[in-house]
Image 1 (cartoon, rainbow, N blue to C red):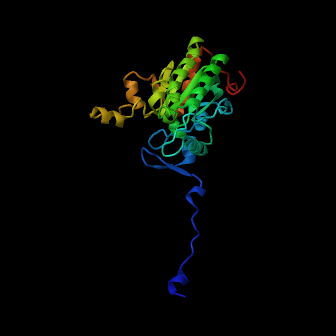
Image 2: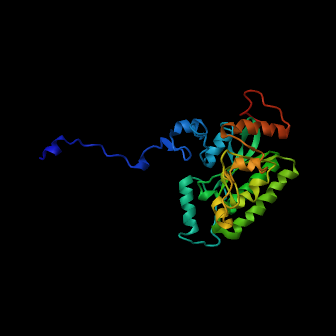
Image 3: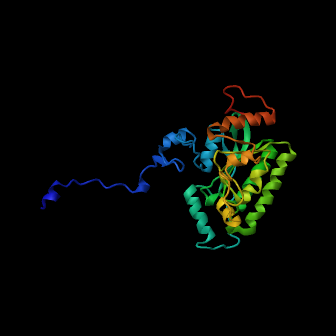
Length: 292
């Protein structure tokens, strides 16, 4: 036996990356590595630089709603493929991959819950599902949430996160812009508040429809908000864009938003806002997660 083999120590094989637990995340802004438990305790806001990491729909509900108050309504409508759309792969295959990745049937989660004790209807989009794109199911779920809110006399809080209309559904996707707008008008007719919270990114047909017709339009810090992306605009007009163009702070300065709210303050902020709009008193201690 060669001498180097005699002294060589065998090392345990490393587990495949997929078998290791996700213990930390690298902040895309400051590049610092942060333990996930620290991020979770901080509402997935980087404790080093304050960057707001993207949330999936369930995480969003957990951050905004009082613990244990959420009752899901969505999940009974499933996407079809009426156009039999195929690009590099078929539309059904893309849907299957998105469903496997996120564990949900579509890019939206809706339901009832409470924010600081105030009963609300909530809709949260999921950018991890096909870029949060708006197809017929997303439009239907938002319309149903708006109609259910109007029927129950509840305000609607919607969190947008989307790349825009879903190209695989063509005109069926684009018609959701009108469909959701009409459904949301029912809340206006009944004098019920509709609040939208724009997260990173909110673009395309979602920005041009239901995301920006709310009574109060809020956004998270640093969120990209616009119709076309900055790169497309820059290539089209062949000019440099202003610093921070299409970011939430820029839009607030130019009157396109009502406020930019840190995620860690959103629940209390929304609770105060809802109580003011509904003219309802602050609930007594211990009643926030109880019955109406």
